[in-house]
Length: 199
Image 1 (tube, rainbow, N blue to C red):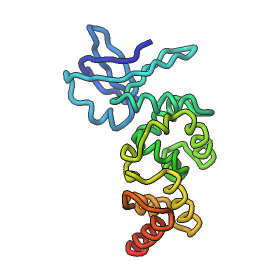
Image 2 (cartoon, helix red, strand yellow; image 1 turned 30 degrees about the horizontal axis):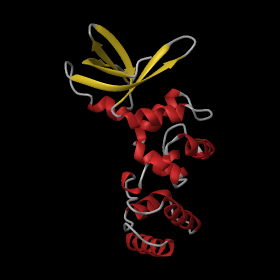
Image 3 (cartoon, rainbow, N blue to C red; image 1 turned 90 degrees about the vertical axis):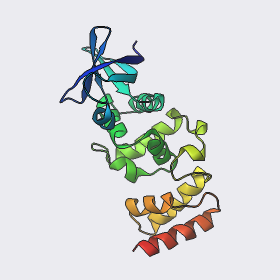
Image 4 (cartoon, rainbow, N blue to C red; image 1 turned 180 degrees about the vertical axis):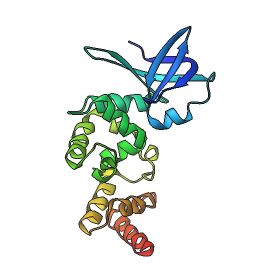
């Protein structure tokens, strides 16, 4: 199984792949859209964390800029009803930290922004990924907007804002602006003040 590639970028393909020359062998590697865009120019060195996906009719390589991205991809393809194409679409829209935060906070709105993910799929992803992603290994400082705030406190604030009728974008902005510490009641009051000021 191939887990790592370092070589020379030969080309990008219309199918969302990088063609990488490693010692005279050209590997076609499917990558998330952001990586495809920033991979560099022809002749530049490319380093990829690789997941080798074996099917009955093909062996497909999926490449990522970081080991965390590959780990998230593998967690996604292990979830019920998620294939490599959908997993790649998720990682084209969300960073590992964004995905982890969405799962921790049960933020279905973020997951539904990915093409091909509806509310039922998003809810199933949250359930499946809770056990597959190593959430306990992440501390608040590694989750954007969540430094020092317990995931359950943020989830309670999110749930309260949903009940009050705020939309996903408004809730995301309010949570991103939260202070580093505080009780649920204080965080909710702060979020409501920010939402009121923004309207």
